[in-house]
Image 1: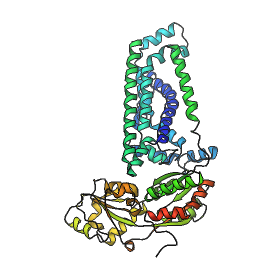
Image 2: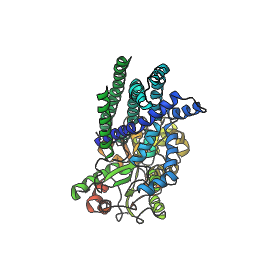
Image 3: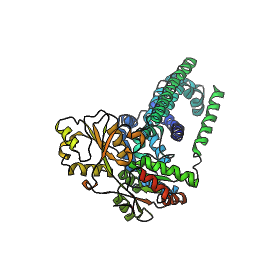
Image 4: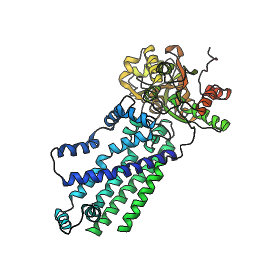
Length: 222
Length: 263
């Protein structure tokens, strides 16, 4: 078992969730409540990583973050290390590929809050912030939770983008999914089997947990 | 609900702080990029190195061509052991290395077949020719000649034997030499051409039979290593260790011909 790779995957998943979810709440809510010119395009862009082959995404990210790009150069100038083939670059890529997994469930959750409820709250003189805090977020919570779990589980399983943008660098960009690939190539089927089983278990628990939680919360608020 | 949300926020903040602190990126543990044919040999060298010096290196294995691209893009490696010396010269020309490095081994190719394969193994590939003519070869594994040196040499050997045209559409290409070996010996293919150093590892040797391909059938697999710009003390120590008696003995055991010992 490659504990280092496991810890790296967990860190990547956790940080992706923590950084992406606040943005996804803001953007999902915006998409749910506002209609504006070009909305369909915005929703299509959000969904794009779902249908694009990971290698296409990986290729563009490699081009965009590489040392020849202005993003890569700027990052290198200020941080003093290149963005590609580093954990930070991997994290950035992970946030981008997970946008649909986080935004879509959250957007649906905000859409399902009845407009009357918001109107009633506004009539009672609730401030915008208080309304979000006391009414919208609690009602949207199951969607937010689903977004978190999907993002986390998907990050653990992502392979193509990680291999292209991250390489296979122990302790830096070798996630569990990559470690399995690496072990198979080294004829170490036992280690590969153990890690595969672990990943299967973690994914199953994560999904089951999200279903269980959203049901319970749904009952309490329903 | 209020309490739980508060505690959730606290857990979130705690997680964030805990995770942002990189897992004690231990001082001076360099990442070494190594050609895939070194998978077993170099792992053993690294183990001996850390017992003797109490220092550690991390090994990343892949195709030399891929590492070349990653190093060009600023990949965080301190040392590069290529399976093709030209790649080291090219990196040196781009001023990404400390110097032209050193030749550390010359590799050999073997033709392999998994147990139960209809392919009869011999170094001059008479068995392969026969099996091809009999239509018994459905899949044959080599590393990708585009970026893996061992793949390129395998192609040369097949061309030398006059079999390239017949086998080309049966090839499965491994992303690197070690994946080619995995393809060749896991039963999905009837055989393959892979590094000698890999079949000398017990976990690989037990999977099939192999024979050395005459070395004059392909350009020599001159393997060169180099320290990259920014290499630290440990990387330098490992570079020197690769040339030590102990490391050379391990490399010799994995079938490499060593500099200064060439016939």
